[in-house]
Structure formats: C-alpha cells, structure tokens
Length: 150
Image 1 (cartoon, rainbow, N blue to C red):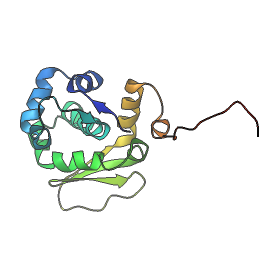
Image 2: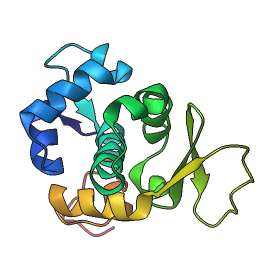
Image 3: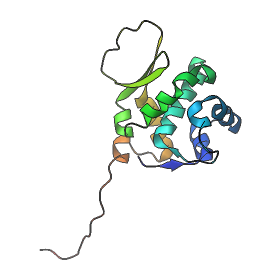
Image 4: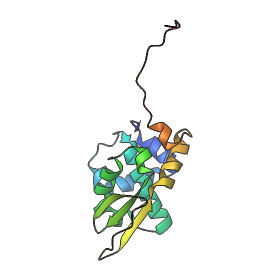
C-alpha cells in the first residue's frame, strides 16, 4: 500500500491525542529522527497501531517499547498489508520480527511479546475505506480500452 499519511490523519485513524504523538516522537527513536511534518507510510501506521495496543491494552509504557521500535517499524514496512495480515510481530529482547501466523513460536530465554497483525490490519483497513487488505494491494496497470471488437 503506497499511502502517505499526515500525522494528523494518523492520529485520527488511531484515535490518539496530539500529546501522545508528541510524546512518542520524543521517546521512540524512529519517530524522533524524522522531521515534524514528514509523511508516514502504511507500515508506519501498522507499527504505531501495534504500539498503541501495547500501551493501552497491555499497559507497556512507550519508553519500554523504545528499544525495539526501530525493528518494529522496519518489520511493518517490509511487507504489504495483505502479507502483514498473515503475520504476527514477535518481540524478544530488543528485536521485533515478523513471524508467519501459523508457525510455532521458538522457546526464548526471556519474555516474548506476540501481537497478531490480522486484527490490527483489519481495523486500519476499515478506517481507511472499508476494503479488505487483499484488495488494497491489487494494483493493476492502466490499460487502454477501445469500444471496437477485434
């Protein structure tokens, strides 16, 4: 999905106040490196939705998320939405990686955070226009159509 979103639109989609976005821009290195009015990609939106869910639903602070935020953003920007919807984000230590939904999680030495992306992507797709993730990724080339039969 080649969408570029303003921060205001991202806040609207994720239902987060401007203060939260300002705080995240200070705490999360991948956002702190960007210019204030830079556009955000669809992958950035998925990563921010995951962060929002971890903060709201699980109670993890954004400063705790900071060490793996860069790998989270990189992972979410590495695949189109229809593939992200078939994955989960797995955070171990300071690394976030994409893992296919149906694979078994390897045994880790420490705590592991797992977030299924299908629900995240479905929510974002609904808020962006109601099409399924598979439909968003279908980009057909422009084709000339004539009215004559051959």
